[in-house]
Image 1 (tube, rainbow, N blue to C red):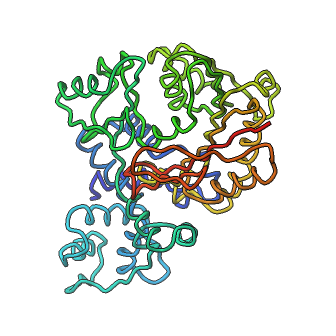
Image 2 (cartoon, rainbow, N blue to C red):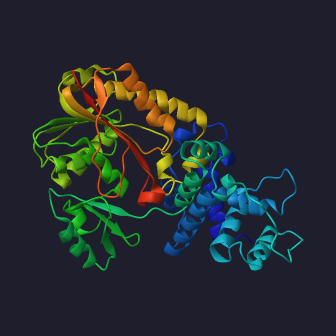
Amino acid sequence: MTDPVIQGASQLLQAILPDFSHPGSDTVRLPGADQLLERHFRQHRTGSQERAAISDLVYQVLRHRRLLQARVQAFLPEGVRPDSEQLAQAAAVQRCEGWQVLAGWQRLARLLGVERVPDAIPHTPLTPAEALSLPDWLWVQWSQQWGSEEAYALGLALLQPARVDLRVNTLRAERDQVMVALQGQGMQVQATPHAPHGLRLGQHYPLQGLAAFQQGWFEVQDEGSQLMTPLLQPRPGELVVDLCAGGGGKTLHLAALMHNRGQIVAVDNEAERLARLGARAKRAGARIVRTVAVRHERDKVLQAWENRADAVLVDVPCSGSGTLRRHPEIKWRLHSAQVEAYHYRQCALLEAGSRLLRPGGRLLYVTCSLLARENQAVVDAFLADNRAFRGMVLSLPFGLVATGCMFSLLPHQAGSDGFFAALLQRLV
């Protein structure tokens, strides 16, 4: 009889990983692993301990899939690919015994039902992509872009679970005030090393029921994301456009940095997300945010702000390759053709954002990608075609280094999600 935790994890993996249940589908539009887990637990009545065990096992497979495949493959006939249940079984072994001891291999063999239980640790050499559980194409791109040593360190960092960071909303509270309040609830909290208004939790806690959250004292936001918005240098009294506002995390940060003076136009092509932003802005006390729904980046609605904005934030849709700690399913859904499609979409959005700037205005281009095609290549192409713009030198917190107008935040160096930013200025 199959262990219910293994069975639950296997079912979820079939829904999350496209090559198990929906090969050839539009993987960009598949729900995230966190959404699918939430949906599964709403439909299946399970206890809290079983839910936690299933979730842990699913994320273990998503992070370490290629390594687990290699371990299982040692016991399968050539040409037979491991299925989702076998991967979940291997993940259970990895979490307990691991692969450095014979007991782990023996337990895996028994779980797989094979006849030949090993009497010695099998010799199974791994490629770097297998050891880091990355698709081959992604390892090749990163090793070419960063060098193999740096790429390996990056890959190791992305195998670690993401921590929970908070951004203190300075419109409502101060960092020390929020830290004391959370510690009073028995939480482990410390200041983030780089973001001046950030806090890092020692573990996951239920936050939305806290009075501090309901009163708008903080937002859940990765430290890396917190470091991006200040690079735009938003000032009180300015007109700022957030062209791809999405959920609005950076929009609300802009309002705090501007001390609620001026105007922020939050633009997105999903009206539902903008409606949620309105509720978040009210809780945060951000009174200067106006939401504008558009169909696309050339929507005539945007003409009202052409040549007027003091600053524009263009936080574009991207591969999300810098967020693999948080969303490890991305690496199994993403392929190089999608990166190319993102590149041209990003070029169009950067061009659209540039039309909104007044002469002398600033534009910050941001991605949560660590692929040059979505980052440096987009900015270089824009500057080559737009002589009225120049790069501006970035000012960063101590310990972080930019290259001129561009900055790559790497998870193994900063302990955050990965981001890229470039600061540009319109001259005339």
